[in-house]
Length: 355
Length: 262
Ligand SMILES: Nc1ncnc2c1ncn2[C@@H]1O[C@H](COP(=O)(O)OP(=O)(O)OP(=O)(O)O)[C@@H](O)[C@H]1O
Ligand SMILES: [Mg+2]
Image (tube, rainbow over all chains, first blue to last red; front, side, top):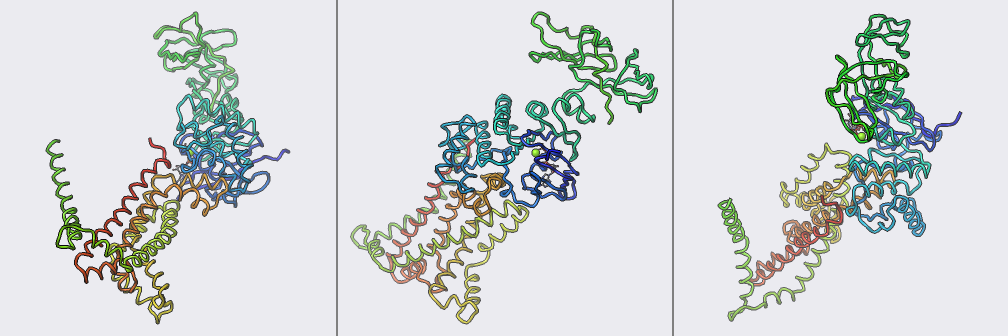
């Protein structure tokens, strides 16, 4: 069995009687980009700070390459970290900021200068070495912070919401740049965010956290398409919920707005006459009713949001409301507000989530 | 609005007069050593006095020692309190205010009792020992100003994040304090230092009771024995003090390098 690069075992952290991290077990592979995703206050930062060594766990272990590092101080862990607040040293110019870790490590001056140049090129800021942090934009400051963290060649990189203080446009371009650099260096990275789109777009794997517990750990594709809990399904992406009644549990049929449909995902534990919540992503619902879309429902368009390449419609199904996405078509305008439409859903796309 | 502003100016004018009149009077008096017109002779007399030079030199030296010791004590303490024990801040702040509440004479009698020639640590029995005692007394006197200045400086930077950023890059506490924290609060530290210097230069009570050749003691001596020279001396010491204050203003001009202004 391949040894995991970073292993977190039964990690527990309490602040003044308030359990913040409640027994987290995780294993990350070498070179992997993992994102800790969850709502505010779920313990993402606390976990990251325990990996860095700024917080001591109440119990549990943090193991890197087979060695328990729980007892080490942050300056002994050989970990790079980028903070949410621009944490550049205001008294040093960009080159000195990037070279700080190298200087501490006792690297000779000419070697250090070469390494700083290399890092400046890596982040696309060659020639900015003599500038001071206050002369840089937020995005540039975070790139310098990244270079400073990477310069001493740490064995792991931690990023705590490094993009949250930036404009939307820069946020997207910078996250792509971070991912590109991470791939190039092959450095194991733990990234923290509460933005699900950010998490889905850059991660190899995502840890979805809720109130100090791991809800699900998996690839973005699986997190989105096969959420294991209702929390994951609703926190990551938009989810439609249709309320129906189990018609025949054995045959896996459900009564939905007068018609009876077959739902393959209906769990064996369902009982006849029981209420059941059927959930599906907006993109699983369509205005076309081809052969694959065996559930057909009639409704009225309640809302039309034109998002560019995608148009999101909200359709009132009489008791249930459903959101659906259709691609923009230059030749056909979307249905008007209030018009009658027929929506089709493939029963195989329907999820039945417990609580 | 108009009325309010006019009143503000009147109050300001009265305040300025209150401060400036005695100064101007002293200055004019210091020029009047001869019956015929104004001269700077009194200043020449003062500056030529070897005791003026030696006492001023001594006080400047003690002032410098006070600043160094003060910085070494106050900067790490204020930093530690902000970083690790923010709950202790009100208590520490109160302690640093004590020198303003306890009269200097109480402090110096306490020192003499504790460190006299028949005590375990007989500091007062030698010149160097007494100088050390004087320095520590002045560190205590300067504490309220030094602590406040340093604490204000620390407030302008994100102490915790900067500390953690340096720490994860491999730096230990000493290195962080010396290379990251201190350079970023240097302007605040220096303003505390010049305030301390201004206090030390004019201090009389402690220096006199410890029998040290300090500038304050010399000023008092001259004042008791001469007429015009004390006025000149007062003006000179005033210029030195205000020079120190002016340095604080000047230094704050160099501050923008340390922080983004937005
Ligand atoms: N040093 C501390 N002392 C007391 N409570 C703390 C401390 N640090 C964190 N907490 C509490 O622990 C909980 C989790 O905090 P944490 O910072 O890990 O959340 P987070 O998931 O990073 O949230 P956010 O997205 O808002 O950054 C919060 O309720 C917070 O108030
Ligand atoms: Mg956080």
